[in-house]
Image (cartoon, rainbow, N blue to C red; front, side):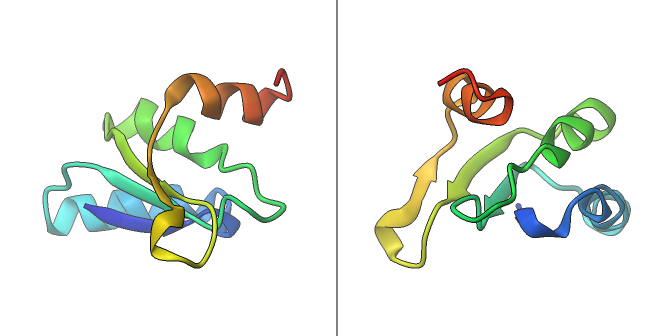
Length: 81
């Protein structure tokens, strides 16, 4: 799995692409979603590389690493929650 910082923005797609070329990835962990970043780059990564998001990080504590919930993520991304 590849761990990506959500504040990286669309550069995360380039990172995922290059890592996936070197080592076949099985999924993503997206951290720092508790800040100003919404993590929209995961949509582009999923479309191009078909990598599922397994976990998200929403803080600095071990309990802040949570299983990814696509519905909650979409609501937060598009502000429908």
